[in-house]
Structures are given as C-alpha cells and as structure tokens.
Image 1 (spheres, rainbow, N blue to C red):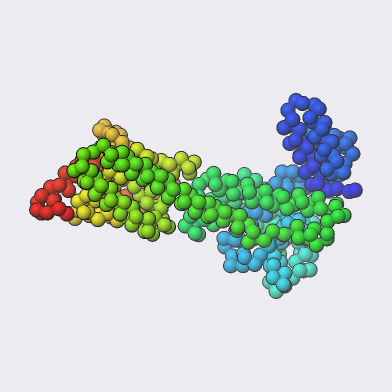
Image 2 (image 1 turned 30 degrees about the vertical axis):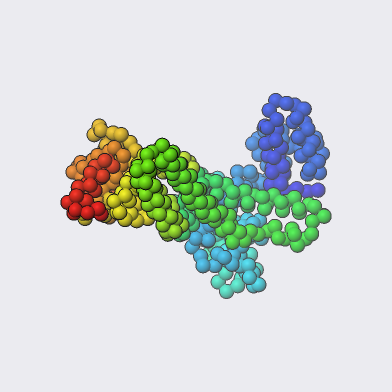
Length: 503
C-alpha cells in the first residue's frame, strides 16, 4: 500500500506522542508500537524505522527522495491558514452560510458554494517553503491556472498563493491569481508565519463575538481556536484513514472533503450558549446570597422582642417585594451581568471568569453593604430601581458592594482608579453622583483631583493613543463621591425631618 508523506508523518507523530506518555517503560513502548502498527496495517519494523529517521532528521523527507512539502510544520501551517481564511469569510461575506471549506481536494483548500451549482469561490495553495525565488512557485501557479480554467463560473474562482516568506514575483501572476494579503497591525503583507497566523485567527474569533456584543476572554479565544483546528485536523485524519479502507462507502469518503462554514459558526457560537450559562450562574449565585441574608434576618427575628419583631418583619417584607420586582425586570432576566458589574464597580476582570463573577457577588459584601443598605433605604419608602439606584434631593445614588475599610489617601486613590478604569462599567456610572459603600468616604473634590492624574496610565492600559478619547471617557463619568452607609442614613433622616414626614 502506497502512503503519502503526510500520512506517514501523522502515524509517526502519533507513535512518538504515545511513546512519550510511556516514560521510560520499554515494555509499554513496545506494546504501543505494536498497537499503532496493527491499527494502520504496518510491519512493526517499518514503523520503528520511520521513527528512527524522524528522530535523526526532524522530518521524513528522505523516505520519498524529494522535497515533500508539506512537512509536519507545513501541515500545521496549512490548517491554520485554511481556518483563518474561513473565519475571515464568515465575518466579511454575506455568502458564508452557503459556503463550505474544502480541504486537500482539488487544492490545498478551497471555498465553495454548497448549493446545487456547487461552484468554487476561491482556490488556495499554501507554500511553507523558506525559499524566496519566484521561479520555485511556477509549478504551483500553473496548477492553479489550470484549475481556474477547469472550474470557471462567471468571475469565479479566484486563485491565491499563501506564503510564509516574502517572495518578489514578476510576470508569473495574473488577474485571476494573486498572493494572499494579510493585515498584520497597520501593515498589509504578502506573507505570514505560523505565530502571526495564530494571532490573526484569534482576531477573527474576537470580531465574530464583537458582532453580537458578546464579551470573550483571551483564554476562551485560544480554546476556541484549538477546537477549530482540531475539527479540521480530525477531518483530514479520518479521510486519510478511510481512503485506504475498502469497507468505507465512497460517498462517505467524499463527504470528508468539506466542512460547512455553518458548522464552524456553531462551534464558535458555543461560547454564546456558554455566556447564557454564566448568566444563569450569576442569577443562582445572587439568589443563594440573598437567601443567606434572609436566613440571618430570620435568626434575628426569632430572638427579638415583639415590638422589634414587627419592625423587622416590615423591613423583610419590603425587601422581599423589591427582590420580587427585580426578578421580573429586564436587568435580572437579560442583563444580570450588567447589574453585578454595576453594584461592584471596583472589581476588574479576571482571566478566570468564575473567579471574576464570584468577586462581583461576595457574600460578606452583599450582606454588610448591598442588602443592608437596600433594606434600610426601603424602610423610608424610597423607590430603588433595578439598577440599584435612587434619587434624593436631586442627587443620584447607587448602592454598591464596596466593603473595604480604608482611610489612607493612597488606598482611596487606588479604589477610585479601579472604578474609573473599569470600562465595562462606564455606562452604569454616567448619571451617578454618589456611590454608597460600607465605610469608605471620598469627596467629589478628591475624585476630581485624582482623576486627571491617572488618565494617561489608563490610556496606556487599554491601548488607546488618542488622548481625547480617553479624556471623553473620564469626563462622561461624573466626579463621583463615595459615602458610607451611615452618612446616607443621616441624609435620609435629615431630609425626612425637614419635610415633616417620612419619605
């Protein structure tokens, strides 16, 4: 049975990977070699010979006596380029839902229409060669020209060469064939190495989520890229196995040529479903913390005297009515994350999303600050909205979970800087004058003085060079004050006395 160099390389690398898992156990290695040899119908000695050649040269090119591009690194590069082009097509083309990515069939990869006419949009040949002589690519260009003529439908297909090194072409290219251009930073380049192509893939994944206004973390982007690469690698691996398996139906072999771009979209969109799961997680976390606070109130209720019991029961009922209304609000049902970020403006993103969300809804902070302030504010018949805001004497207040106990100016500045630099929370603060904390007091004058001092640092942090953009962000957010809950209750009491009635 004749095998391609790529097939042999895949088998050898699979064997090497299994060997490494066996450590120094020679018997285990021998057993793994026998299993892999039987799996692919190989003579055991032949597999051992291939592994030896790979260890000696780092490739298996001498097996076939010619430059067998792609080698393993070339194979990886080709898969990455195919994925990048597919993602770019998904993000930029209205035709993506009717398109397939065809791998290693008439070309290294192609994009084609999956309707009945089934024509090709583009043909792509990937060259991971290090040579910079344009004459080395003549055969590849001629091959693409022939395929374009063969599969021509109106203005399709277009042909592209993908290069890992810069090559200066003269008259070899044509209107239908060009070198693929990569946008790397502010530069447009006609070549791209493996490391940069991974970054471009990550950028396209991020663009996909930005279209739907969905937040995504770097670790999630990397995991999605790995899953997408695995999807392509798995398709190629299965087809290589099926090609030599007479028991597999020819139509099934043919189906392994393509991946629907819809299928790739579904895989990427799994994070959208995951975000919904995180929203459910936040709702459950909030309910759990609220239930804990109610249990504390119940314990106090049991030991209080009758008169105090009635007052406590009234407070608890008002709080329960507020929470019940909140549960039916759009904020709770569809924007629970915005609510949590809003009441905890001092918590910045963490790479671990679970840690971040748990920080937003810490039990002590909710009990000692948020629920306590809500309960005592409702006692005075002040209406609190679903954003945890209320208005008193022309001042817009927002209830938070800020539970720190700080007096030093340095720590106060750090707290203010966290709040202002939390760009995810900017929209929640635009109309807020005062944040209510447990024990922190910072005046508007202090905030105004400190704000300008860390504008430049914030600009650098989020990668913005335009100072006006940064200043607009800071100026849109008012000069906030932070007051402790005791000061708030004093203001409420004073207002109630001056108006001769309970508000």
